[in-house]
Length: 294
Image (cartoon, rainbow, N blue to C red; front, top):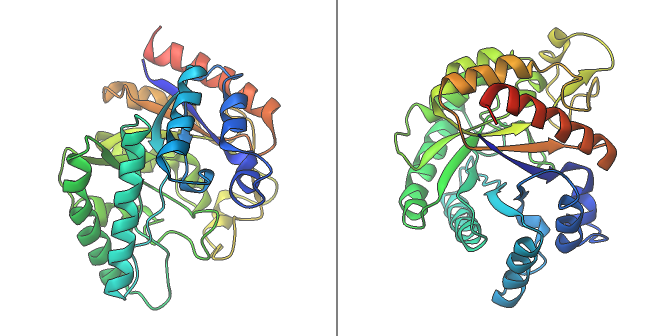
C-alpha cells in the first residue's frame, strides 16, 4: 500500500517569501490531516545549521510524520559550466538534507527553457549533470526522482524537459537504480498532453507520484497547446479538489498497481486552502484503498 504525503501549495509564499508561516507551523497543520508524511522544499528552511535541522526532525517525529521527499529544483540548462557545477553542488546539498531528514527521494529536474539553449545542448547538459550527481546520491541511499515538470514557482521560465518527447530523450539516457520518475498527471495537462499517454510512456520508471487535479475555467485542452506559459501558469486552468478535475485517478492508479507501484504519493495541491486539501486527502485515501488494497 503506498503512503500519502502532502505539499503545502497553498502556503508557498508564506513559508518561502514573507515567512509569516514557519516550517513548524506547517508540520502542525499537516498533522491534522490523514497523511503519513510531508514533502519538503528547500525554501521552507530558514537555516541549515545542525541545531535547527535537529529541531525540524524532532518536530516531525513528535507529530508522527515522515519526510520522504525533497522537492529540489536544480537548474542544469545553462551554457556556463561554472553555473552548472554550482547547481550540481546545490543538488548534492539537497541530497544531504533529504538524508538528514530521513527521506529517500530527492527531486531532480532539467532546468529552465532558455531561448539561447538548444534542445541538443539542454539534453546533454541535463544528462551529464544528473549522471554526475547519481553516485553522490547512491552513497547516501537517496534516489533521484525526475519529474515531468512544468515550472518551479520561483523560476522565470518553464521546465526545459516539460514535454514528453524531451523528457524521454533525457531519461532514456540515464540507467541507474538510483534514478526514476516522479509522475505528475496535472503537469501533462498544463502542457496540453494526455496524462494517461504520458503515464503509458514512463510507467515502468515511476517511483513516486505527485497527486493534484486541474479543471478548465474556459476553452479546451487543445487551447493549452497554443500557450507558451513562460511567465506563469496557463490562465484557463485552475487547481481544484482532487477527483473533481480532469485527471482519471481510477485509470492512473490501476496502471500504477499493474506496474507494482508501492511508494509515496504526495499531494501537491490545496491551493485554495485546508478545507479543499482535506477533501483531496479523503478522496485519495478512498482510491488508494480501492486500487492498492487495505
